[in-house]
Image 1 (spheres, rainbow, N blue to C red):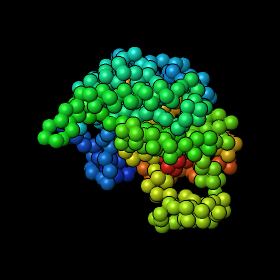
Image 2 (image 1 turned 90 degrees about the vertical axis):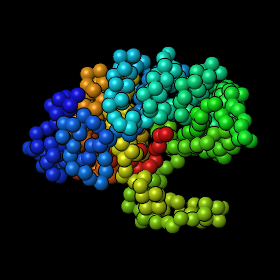
Image 3 (image 1 turned 120 degrees about the vertical axis):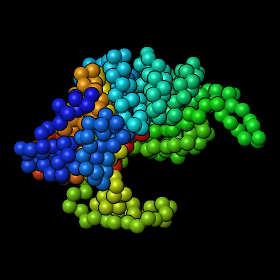
Image 4 (image 1 turned 45 degrees about the vertical axis):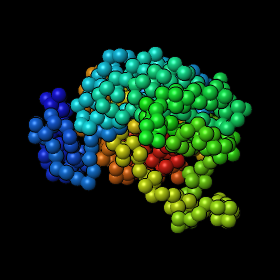
Length: 422
């Protein structure tokens, strides 16, 4: 593997021990000065570069077991794409496991992407095998396939956290978004899940000792048609023993879904005076006063600054592998997709470093082009396409008006804290 890594590193790159600067033959910064840690083979090979203020070790890997799904949700990317459907092969997953074991500590594994993980026929085995190599394992599901049998099998693997997607508090509002789904069925499945944990627990010295330590979370995709349901969903979650909630915004993959977004003022505030707020109690008095000026100011300076021009995938040292084995730096680049901002369709083209079937995970992670991209995103010197979008370059992520080349991230809503993933 070390020979693989060496052969894939450009001459003059910082990974050869050169001090911070540009790769040979290039005026743009590459991966110079980045730190690689806890990889014994790299230490033995003496190719660890100088330390900097952040590390490039893989800490979390999103694995897309399938891009198939049992539902037809209004919010889904499949409403606007034309890609083949498939399941991850055993061979591809075996290559992933082999690569994960190379890192120390073993990166977290998150089963999720743009499909329903429980739709994969081997998902229980995949979770079990990831746990056996020492990974923290999490998974997201719509909950329909989380039957008592599936719940028991997943609990037996020792899975750490299961996220349930619930976007409505009533059967009607839920089914209006997740077409083909039934909220009562999801609630029943989660209730049975908790009953299994309760029935297998014991009491010792007045302490409740669960056999299974799996936690539950709820994700909620917020939009105009369901935001009023959020308080009831939070209440439902507490009743279902949920320990974590995550609210994200809708990504409008179709032109019609633009009318559902709750962040129009954030992406259309270019030229407005900026408003910076202190920490403040979100009560009726404060919110009513702010609401009266919501259309007249730029709210970006009032958002947590670590959410602005910061990629959550890069900052948290994540990678993503699609069902067909393609390795990407983030979920946003895992598949070609189009979203709408201010009536303009922005197409984000897929970008992969390579396929896990052809190259080891360490080789993909430490590939110079991947490290160079991560360095660019850390600096985030991209055009502010999310708030501008006034030129033709915004239509694709191929280049921007600052001279950056594919892939560019100025139009990414993840990097502006608008869209979030578990």
